[in-house]
Image (cartoon, rainbow, N blue to C red; front, side):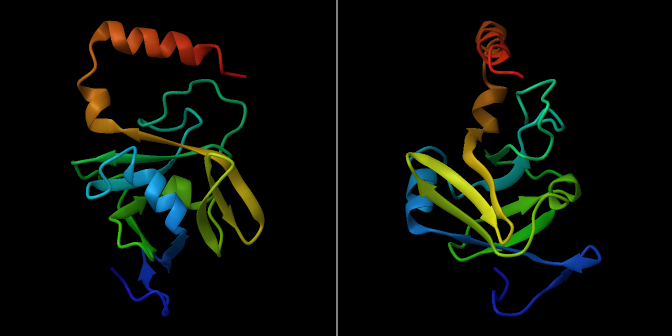
Length: 150
């Protein structure tokens, strides 16, 4: 983990820093294995981890993806106060400003930065479990999600 008090240069920009509230860490730990690699990714149909397609809200829906694998697309480290192995991609970096905070409020994960709330209902998924789904399970999940697309 990098020192949170000093900016770190990464890929030509300032290192991202995320304050994860204890309640958010507890929520994550109850849903995924937080010792895995975690990716802060959009959930708007723009990447391989998004199950939503045809979204009309590019960049305003986020998710935390847990996986035992590394992903070259998600190689930008996100410093955090909870010691999680958290990364994001160049594409997501566009939407993330300074003062990033992940909180748990009203039974949902809330991602915000100095500009305000980025997503009031950040989703969580384990990519390793998704890979083990049967075709029938994937089809049923996609059918259910299709009802939620704008």
